[in-house]
Length: 189
Image (tube, rainbow, N blue to C red; front, side, top):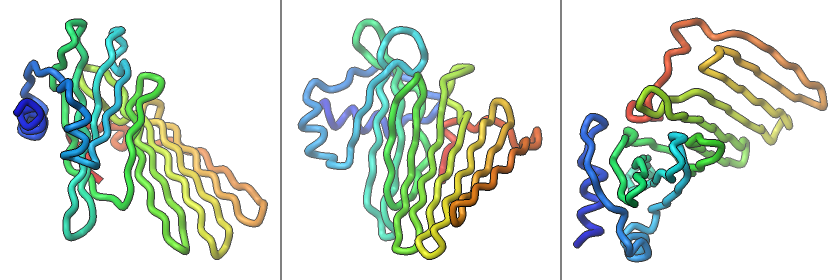
């Protein structure tokens, strides 16, 4: 019963509602009920207590829809709901916690092209905001590699293209209106 309550709570809350909940002790049962459930833990808000992030997915007629949920860890061992992303549709997706950041990684592989996009979210101003983006692609037919890296805090953008062993790097700055930090709860791709 408790595991059903936790899942219901995670999906029912909006970004403005918080609640005290405990992560179920029977995570193995939770994983068997939701085989695409992936949990992560790590200190995201720099308070010395591990926070909890999970990615859920469900199959639709168009592929998979993913949801990213973040819970704030408390010293008592309980968790407080912080945010849930909008649904994210993509062929393959992963989430990582490292260096006090939450990374959302999307992959697409075809015979012609490999593509990955990495979105870096950081805790600031009582929320999780997109502070960095990196796109990497490789096309098979012309052996072209491309990387676009954006830092939304500084506005720096670096585009790198490698074709036939020749590397071209273009550095630019984002316009001020393009530097608005997107919150995780408004994230949908």
